[in-house]
Image (cartoon, rainbow, N blue to C red; front, side):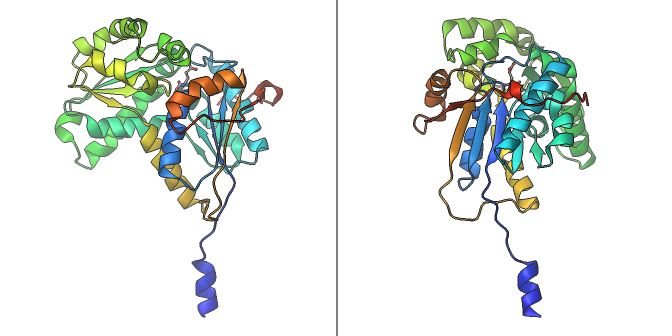
Length: 301
Ligand code: DGL
């Protein structure tokens, strides 16, 4: 009798890495949170710096690139894929989920949930790439999350007057990739992009692109202290943890985790950009991977 009990409660362990991809360095803002929340997990990060930005590209191109990135990560034997890019999450999540055969986590739902919890007035702004804004998926996710909370009687006063405003800030991606996180040019761009949101008294602003947390200081300065900035990284990491636990995929081996980086552009350039941001020393041994060699099967879900 005891044997049966032991078998059914046996805790499983899976030491394969978590695969994370983005169009460039933006996904590092998510990776950093995954490392913090899940210190025993190994990771493989792919930054598609050679083909960045995604946010100015068509639905079809973003789906193709994302499926190729997925195939590359699967070839590295990952146990899960995190689409650490809002543009790819907005356009390619369904396609990647349909093809991956491992659990897939996107970054939009956690950000939307965090925003509807944080808002005091129901006035929520979303800044993102043009591709994400035009998809309307972030806005729909915020409405959906607000609906769930309203039904449960949560944050009623604010959510009954829900007002959502979106703004595309395409230059922010290039500024982040350039390492210009806190410069005069970035400030000028932010003032221009955020003008309307400020005027409309947005109290909660979703950084709906994983590159934007790199510009957090400038964005906060421009929006002022009354606006809460939502960086979904930490809630994405929590979602990764939940999905690993639900699927019995946690690494409980006690082995030292490995963190491997790939980029489709120059590895040195990638490491130069990643170093100050990751804060835990320079990532070393970054390799080049050209994911366009992988199949991006044509399914436009
Ligand atoms: N960091 C990505 C996002 O979250 C993509 C930015 C881009 O490549 O345009 O949208």
